[in-house]
Length: 371
Ligand code: TYM
Picture 1: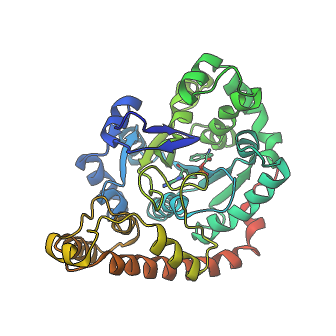
Picture 2: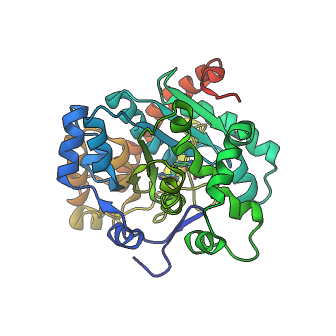
Picture 3: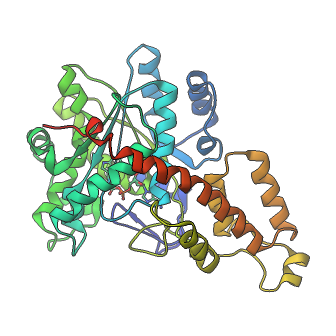
């Protein structure tokens, strides 16, 4: 990993070495044995697992042991509503939907309007709260099951959350939070407390049902520190540690790091087809040669080409993807042509997503948990 690479819940930058992250964070790689166990129950393997986009985990073997004993898990994931949802967020949620469908389980989804108020300068609490409900439309548009999916908006569900969050907070020292999140003495006490709120949904169903229920959290790696800290606390409060599946980042269009509203150019779920095309044509980092003649002769490098890398998230068909890889590598496919393939793929997807997003407005009350 290059020395400047950083992975925290609030900053991801540089060239990320995922093997090294596994060692540094003390997680485990997803190996063929786990894939076979998932396949046994799901009947198939999602492309993100096959392609090692979900590449690491915590305690998934334990979770599957429990599942096989008839102890069903629930899913928990979330969103910090600091702006519009971008394609990177959607990748985690699409995989989460696949898990929900295949294992027929409930999902608890947390909208952390408190977090984004505390960490994102310039946003008021009213704004982050409004964004939570706007972002919830994107979550619902993914197609999660009605009745089996509940969305928590932190400040509106605080009456339920707070009494559990302080119990978590009681067991975490400032020094732990400093080390895990890079907070300093200048951090606000709201920032220091926040991680306790993100810990709660992993055991809320256990509280409500009066018995321990296993929890599985799909996320991209930047969110792991919250649970690395909280996993020491759960058993002290009498709950299971949640299992976690870690995803790699969809990069920013210009290159390494993660796609994010604050760093680099992102594609949002509300972008028009024209905006998508313009951004990709202008910004997507190319692994091609600088002239057509050279490209035809020497070929491109799909391993660093952002359009190709994005297609590994977006193109489900392995054969099509392989052909694009080969054609680009041997110079048959030009960067401009590769970009058009990506543009078409994204715009086709967004057309459908935007329709579902509008339809979600009438359904939102069925998903939001009220205290
Ligand atoms: P947030 O809003 O930063 O991100 C939402 C989810 O998207 C993942 N993510 C990405 N995945 C792939 N490529 C990217 N470029 C990319 N950028 C973000 C994040 O890892 C996350 O899974 N504090 C959280 C909200 C939250 C949460 C949770 C997330 C509350 N509870 C439990 C995961 C699990 C946040 O600000 O996420």
